[in-house]
Amino acid sequence: MNWTDERVEKLKRLWAEGLSASQIAAQLGGVSRNAVIGKVHRLNLPGRAKAGGTPQAASRPQARNTSAPRAPNFAARATNTTTRTVARPVGATVVKEEIEIEVTQQPAYEAPVNVVVPMSRRLALTDLTERTCKWPMGDPLKDDFHFCGAESGESSPYCKYHARLAYQPVNERRKAANVAGARG
Image 1 (cartoon, rainbow, N blue to C red):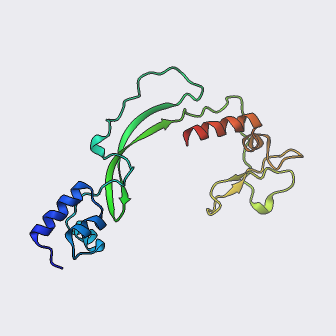
Image 2 (tube, helix red, strand yellow):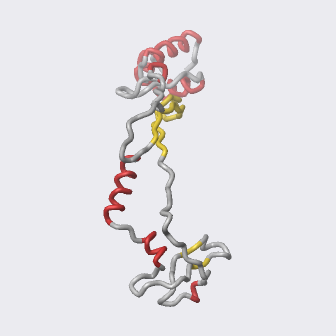
Image 3 (cartoon, one colour):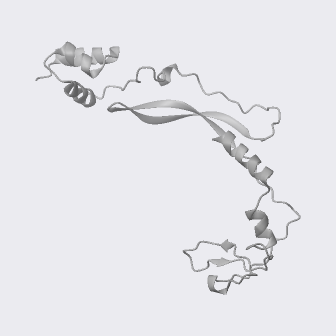
């Protein structure tokens, strides 16, 4: 099948009208759906959104600036909306479109002031006993990897400091899960 200038122009017009490759093939006659798709790619014709999909980037509203002061909330998060260009597949083509993304910044963590960090004894795995803290420190694949080694309590594998890090009260875990769930 030869693609004459007349048939190419008709293909471009039907593609711009939103007809599917199958519908275009039927109107052109003597050409398959795959031949139409191949020609569309070779002509670099713009992709189209699927039926019921999102509108094209041109019809999207501009990004909102939500950095104006807001009433304080429990989570105390700063948010603003930004527009990003992403590529996504639509059928056999890739469409670039702009999407709005809400950017959230978590407040900086402030460590409690009254916590005393124990001096690490930098013990190797073979040096640990029942009464030493087994909190790992560093990268296990590096030579300087070690364990805390400070004295641990009878009912814990960790010293008091690392036990506070490892075991959080239930209500603190729920708060952390709620904050994480609100972000995702």
